[in-house]
Each structure stands twice: as C-alpha cells, then as structure tokens.
Image 1 (spheres, rainbow, N blue to C red):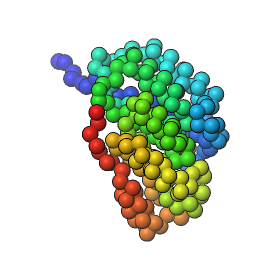
Image 2: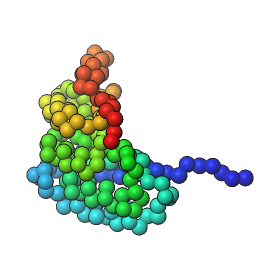
Image 3: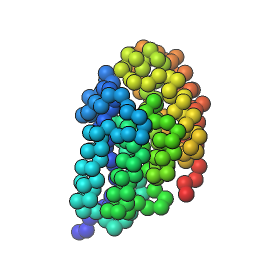
Length: 203
Ligand code: SF4
C-alpha cells in the first residue's frame, strides 16, 4: 500500500519581536522597545536573522518543488529592516527555491514602517500584507496595551495603497474590553471601506 501525501511548498518564518507586549498576549516574544531609525536594525533582531538563515541553509529541502507561499508572522515582522527581510528571502530562494509567482506575505503593525520601508519590502518580494489593526478605537487600543493609534491605522492603509500591493488583509480582534456590538459593527464597516483584498493579478 502506498501513502499519497502532498509535499510542503510553503514556508512560515517567525519573527518573535515586538516593541512592547500587548496586555492580552501570551505568545513567546522578546520586547525590544521603540524602533530605532527605520533603516537601522535592532541588534537582537539582526542576530536572530543570522540564525534563521543558518537554520534554513542546514535544513534539507522536503521536495524539489519551489515554495509557492512564504509567510512572515510574529511578533512584529515589520520591525525587520528591508535588508534583513531580503536576506531571509534570498536564503529561502537559494535553498528551497521560490516559485514565480508565489504569495509572499508579511504581518505588519501600524506605526512601524514608512513609505520607503514598505517600498523596500515590496522590492524584496512581499506581495501581500496583513495589517494588525485589532481595533479602530483609541480607548480599546489603550486598554489592550497596543502601541498604535487609530490615526496610524489609516496612515498605514494609505501607504499600502500607495505601493499598490496586490492584496492585503486587516486583522481585527473581537471580545476586547469596551467593544460593544455597535462598535464591532462600525469596525467591520470601517474595515470594508478601507478596501482590503483588492486582488489585482500577481506577476
Ligand atoms: S503585537 Fe502580537 S505578538 Fe506582539 S505583543 Fe502584541 S499580540 Fe503579542
């Protein structure tokens, strides 16, 4: 009897660093504090990226089929510099191959990137982002210990539209303190109005 199974063609890269710890979070992360200038690296993240690349280089590829999906999750992957992101993607490409097209996604948090930063991520290969909105209400964001404001959410979406990403998603959390049914309805309407999942064709 032979067992049929699909060989993996996706990679998940975990970036376990955040500026501060949200009050509801029990993920294993390292808190690095406020961001240095956008093009300089947190030293601990640079060391971690070196280790991840070594790990990739010593991992046997499960198949000869190139990766069709790469996902950077966290933590806060948008604390990576463009160079660090490109270093990981180049290492994945050298050792496993990345298909063309492939969906290359990244979780990003409002207030952790600017236009040049986002353009650099896209030039490195990112073609989808997931924005950590969580709530559109300042009172809720503060009650949860989030580091961003509602204004930074809208500024971040504006940047995403400016770089013409093929598609993006917005992350919202239900059941948070001070979240009423009316506020949840309003949040969903706000999210839809921001036009995520634009779904242009990937090249
Ligand atoms: S951004 Fe996410 S991973 Fe980081 S502290 Fe907040 S909930 Fe945890």
